[in-house]
Image 1 (tube, rainbow, N blue to C red):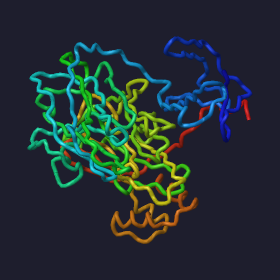
Image 2 (image 1 turned 90 degrees about the vertical axis):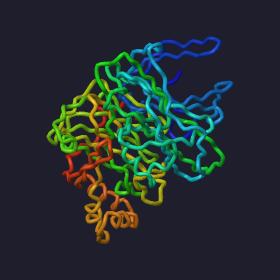
Image 3 (image 1 turned 90 degrees about the horizontal axis):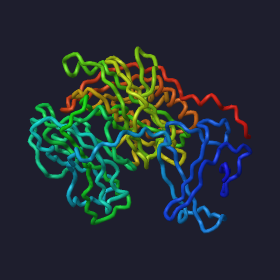
Length: 470
């Protein structure tokens, strides 16, 4: 047993300070059990601080103690050390139901968004959905990037054909209310014990839109996919009707990350005072208990900051060590009330040292996204509360060619000469720029307004940074 760290190459170097206590090391016919005690913060510069972030574990195994670090004898897994475990639901009261495609031929294109409509369970009384899990076709593992289930209004003509989610079919844009979501690395999710997603009432959707994003960058041919999401519902109702609110940056090329940036922060703003405006009536405060962070390959950390009257008052979920390959729904330590009028600011920090061109917001895995799904109650018919940056302000600060349209500005950003000075100027411009705050009704209706930037405090390290080991 050793408390050690990496320098530049294998093997690890033993720490001067051994900051652990071995509690158990045992072996049976199938498992080795290791139990270790360690403080969350050891104030040793060579120890990883244990916080509510993704932890990457690497296991290297071999026939003797002369381990060789190679892909053949290495196992990697990301998970949460501080995961909040829920009470197990009695499976006898749960009824399964599946939303999935059936033998869909995955195109050879790099990026495909496939959509279709599927009916909800046929129930005559109110039920609650309390669990969901991915149905992953083994033939398409590594190609299916995410699956989202959207609730539809009941005034559409539904069909079972599979089409492009963002193509010519306008019906898909009228089903915007996220009900469930899965992305790479996600596992089974149980809703909090006092909350469920309602089905079976007059106001609940009778159909859903399933959206599956395929990333087929190896252009594989002839792969049939039957992936989807399996829900579990019950007639034993819970206290609260829950929903999901999408917040962050509206997915569009106005969102950009320069090439060669070590750390570059992007922001999306939700102004909740717009919610009563689009609904046309007062709305009660809502309560957030769970969240799902979503970014693509450049994102290294995500924060969801909660503001009231322009002052930062807390967090609605964050991960300083975001892992694209482990996008798991996670619970907040407690329920947080969002008052109507509060602001929610999502910050995504990206790193692009090896990218030669600008990374723009968009649907492809090689594009970027910055979105947080907030699970909350009581449910309201709002699909998204997010924003677009005033990119013209960035163009002016960088002294680029004058832009008559937003897309002109995007072209100018793409053609800029990016170096450390330009990146720093763009970062400052983004932090002081106004936002076009947008609210999407679940039927597709949208309103927006220009909103001023919020004062942003950068993340601060833990206080115990007086290290004992150089």
